[in-house]
Length: 230
Image (tube, rainbow, N blue to C red; front, side, top):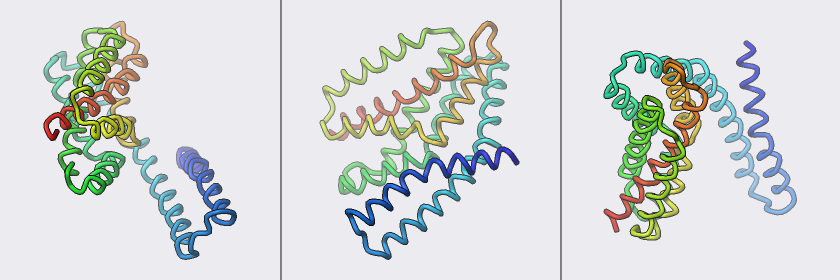
């Protein structure tokens, strides 16, 4: 019951500021048509209700399951199993990420279909999956995350020089949307669960580093997509 109350309060505090700001603008500067403003208020109620259910689902199901999967995979002691399923889970959770679908739809619309929605979603998902696998590899072999982050972003900037300019901002936006409300909790709990069974390791540092690495993957993937389409 406390979890439900905390979630409801969290959602209210999240959407209340934007609701207040738009309401102030409505009656001072922008003066939207009344029916449009009413649609906005209805949308706020629907978004709030959806977020409450979504966050409850994340806390009840995704977080504990992700952590359990991470710890169970690590207990197998098979490197290829941990890396493969890290890739697979990173891929499928990104495909389901709402933020990725919103961005891909907008890009598809703005580009007039030049950058297909499904291709972009698949590219982003493959990028996340690949770097989740790399992050699991890091956890197993205790690789310093600084080297991987530095190498990853160095590759990003090198590749950006050979990619059509239109794909560069899209690639960085793609990296941002993968840190959404579905992907982050699952990937984070996956990393924490995997690190928690590794002897002598700090589960918190390894788990949080996984999210940082995962956000590089879609940037590289979309830049590569730009090279192909360019």
